[in-house]
Image (tube, rainbow, N blue to C red):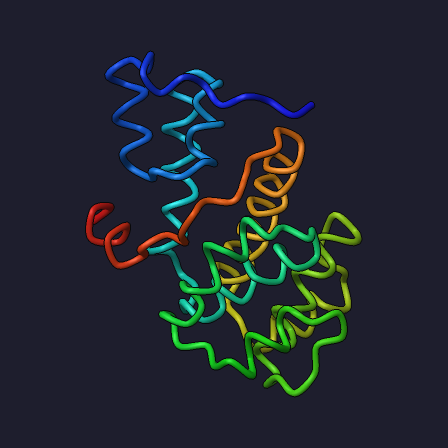
Length: 179
């Protein structure tokens, strides 16, 4: 099913408010859903920006899920966020490659978490044991939710046919308006 975007000229005030929070094609398409659902979705997604994870780890997980799902849309918006978080071009290249290499142990383990979530639907016992030696339970829990969230986003994008936006998000603006 490829869906048409809802007509923005017919948005209710509540729909306009949600679209203005994150004015991208994903939000437009989400507005086929009830406004409280869209608001909860945006609240949840944006909550990762201020969660337990180091911003580099957060963006690593998002880039990896986007790569594994072939989501050009997620990569368009999160490559700038990854750079803003401090990931180097070499690290980004490794994270978005089919066979990542050259990353430190923390990054490699979080890549494995994302790979496990995508391939197995859970983090394997072996990966969990390794993660527990370096990361806290709150960090592992959040990284798992993050991987699942971006897996869901990729499914929604592909199913509904959300088109690439003309430009990536201005994350500085998103962060200042979400605060």
